[in-house]
Image 1 (cartoon, rainbow, N blue to C red):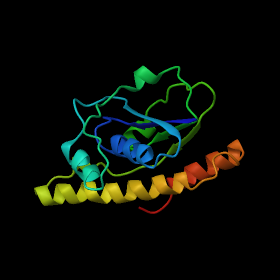
Image 2 (cartoon, helix red, strand yellow; image 1 turned 90 degrees about the vertical axis):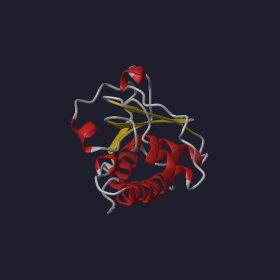
Image 3 (cartoon, rainbow, N blue to C red; image 1 turned 180 degrees about the vertical axis):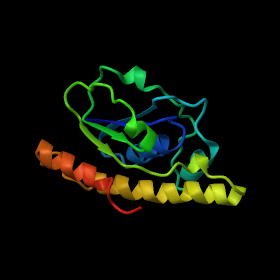
Image 4 (cartoon, rainbow, N blue to C red; image 1 turned 90 degrees about the horizontal axis):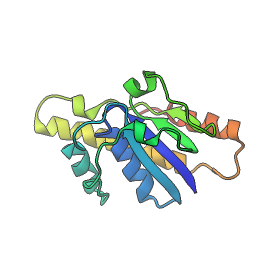
Length: 158
């Protein structure tokens, strides 16, 4: 079973959503998410956006990347620019690493409708990238090809 760690700064929205998507496709993956500076709780708008398609992340809680240090992962993916720019911990076993940057929907101001629209936009972008990832022949690609293709997903237009 492949293990994936999705990282963000607060682990309150984007990484939680990515974890929820990856789990929902039941692709035989062990999925975790964490933050370098975890928030108090998962953002309610992220919970709502995912619930609209039947994915429940409401029981999730932000976790610190520190609780995963020393563990082996096959993939470590950052989904926010702040986490991607921070010093990355050493991950045993040389996991495939990639950055799939998404704008922070929690930072959007304005009306409730504008905030909800920001989460919905990220929701669709995230789903598209997760589907691209899950379409890869993970078991048949050599490591360098796999890393190149997983990283290329982050370059796909949002």
